[in-house]
Image 1 (cartoon, rainbow, N blue to C red):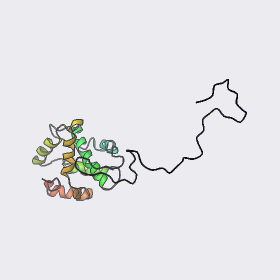
Image 2 (image 1 turned 90 degrees about the horizontal axis):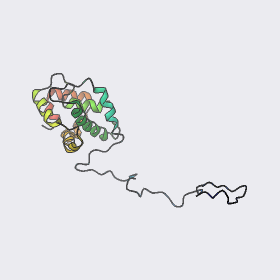
Image 3 (image 1 turned 180 degrees about the horizontal axis):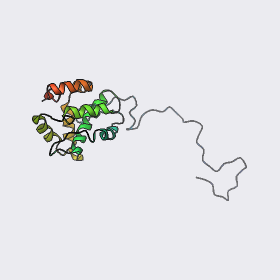
Image 4 (image 1 turned 90 degrees about the vertical axis):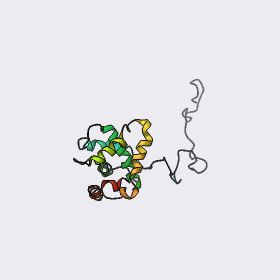
Length: 173
């Protein structure tokens, strides 16, 4: 706290706080939020951790006019479910999401296909129903868990050719 105005001070004395020249002792990550060097937890319902995963929500705008939706399908639900798949793929490469992660997610469920199979449309309508609501976390996790890591490690061209051959193989159906 600064000294009151009436307290006499010398010409070289400052009334302002100055920090000590160094900190006593070494620094270590000891608080709960500091995880430097600590192993990343994994397991059921913990998701796939990765850096800057929220950037996928910005990338969704790239596909805004490219999605092929049928009656009863809503962009909010589709985007919410596919962002989970995209961030899962990005975390496998230990990086933030890129546009190809979303392209693969949309492609796997036929949202970039002008004529998807009728069975796929019925399947995805049920899987993506109302998942944009925050209390449908487990349904969004189920969508991400449908796609195995082996599928997500493929290139977009590989995913596209396998989708055309048989979409069920890539979704564990």
